[in-house]
Image 1 (cartoon, helix red, strand yellow):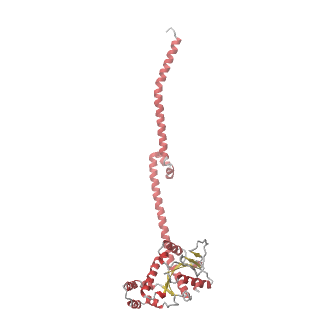
Image 2 (tube, rainbow, N blue to C red):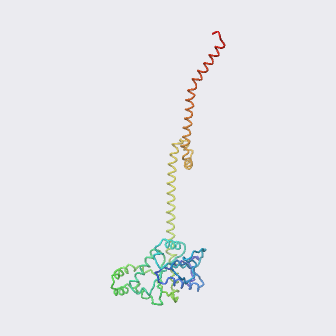
Image 3 (cartoon, one colour):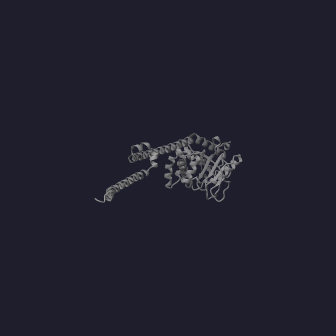
Length: 335
């Protein structure tokens, strides 16, 4: 069965379940988990909705708790997200989680919509716009799950997506000003509908899950065929940009070191500059001036000593002459 097939080479398939509040995301996740347990393929379930009171399924990771866990490699990783779509889709944390999973494992976004509340064409178009924005934001394989088919069959929504005239006829019955905007938007979403995977599911009765896993398997193949090469290309581009930046920084560093070398040659002389490398010049920076000051101070001391000797020499000669004259007088007292 499709439910027993995980990702390629035993890697898990990450299923990110998104949808408006009340669309039945948590119930759908419970249904998925029960179905996979029945197939002896227990999933790794993550709850990212902090507002849920009673979780109807066992979660390996629950955002409401602070837990320490080891990495668990399962065939399916199912992530239940908050009902406020923007909290996960457009937040930095949601983007980080999505990209981290998608860059490592086959990942599929599942958008759950409430079929019973989408019988109005304007509400239906609002759901489709949400789905379209999430698709282009995440850039991942996408499945629309039309939940609560136990209340109303989803065939009318599929017909609206496939037949533009039928949807326009339904819009003609609406008299609000929003219907004109909806009519214009329906033309834009034709391309979106053409490649969209749609499954009708009842999370309460468990119907439609076999078709869902068939579409999930196709989405995983689509990820491996189209999305993984793109992620690898983006990763390679990022690495090349980082390496280029490092090379430019290194070149700037060598240029700075070369300018230090030129300055060092003017201070230390040609012989010293030729003998010292750039790294040695950096290490001796600040010491050249000190050595020059020491040499200048030594020169000052020498000059000072020479000056003192120049003053002392005539006095010493006069003293020696006086002593010789006294000795001569003593030796010749008659003189």
